[in-house]
Image 1: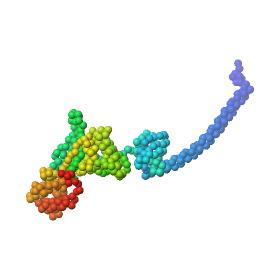
Image 2: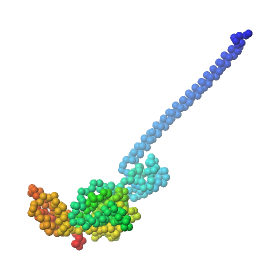
Image 3: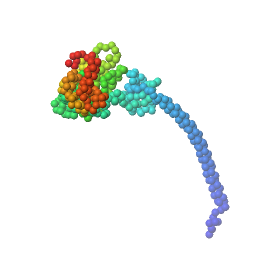
Image 4: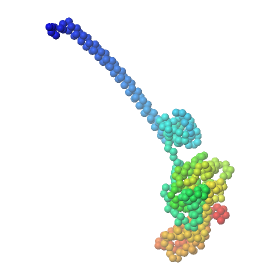
Length: 414
């Protein structure tokens, strides 16, 4: 037999070693080529990294510069306007606060959903570009007109106005507290009332008592606040006033001294008078226009009903005109008792005598009489007001009445 060792010849062994060496050399060459390729790739990546870092640095510098420009553009003051139309991704039509219409660009960083017709925006003062979209807000005068704390005056503090209190409760409170009663009879409730009467007879106090007795929103302002300088501003305030009332409904609007904007419309040459007339026409449209005022009631007050426009007084706008005249004997007695209920007085003071001596006095003058009598007693360190204090107070009030006699027509309050 031939052994295994004898089977492998030296020639075969040499060939095997040569073959292994060849394979190892080829593998080494492949590794060197791969290494060289990876080295070149590494150098290329390092170059790309440096290039990208430079680009990022330039972009950061550009962003910083643009951010500074945007910050400078955002610095006040700005012009407030409204968007009328969005033309494309860069341009929009806006109306500035003075009424002029402009074609402008807008900040691309603004959310596109916020840029819509009617939105309130801030415009750059130089380029009028849209800088920011502002939240919709009511006019400060309109927002400030909403009464937060109820007045302390109640109907019990009003003397001699029982009939007027009954009328205003039926016209203002009843439609808000029991609307089904009007639906049952198929009639529309009164939209508003106007209180007329001489100064100092309780028109404003009656409105305060309504605000105290109701649980709805009470908005009050003086009509002169609606007379604005620029064209359309007064009408806009009236519109916002009623929009606020609808949003806060049920609500009551009280406009004092409504003759400031409600005077008869005449052919006037001044732009101020024409603007006041525009404000009145907006008020007329709100009172009896397309928008419902079901849960909004209006109370107005004036001491000059003779100059009010006829369109303001017709049914459908002010359905009831509540006259608050000068108090008669019984009313003056009730008013004096209200104001004197907490005042310490001597037995010599007779309220009946004071009533007979104050014919023609308004409620405000009767209150002033009581206050003046109290001041006389305090001035002399008395513990109680005496008959002499009231006589002195009456003399003082009569003197003021003679000095401050008004210029209203004699027949106005007769």
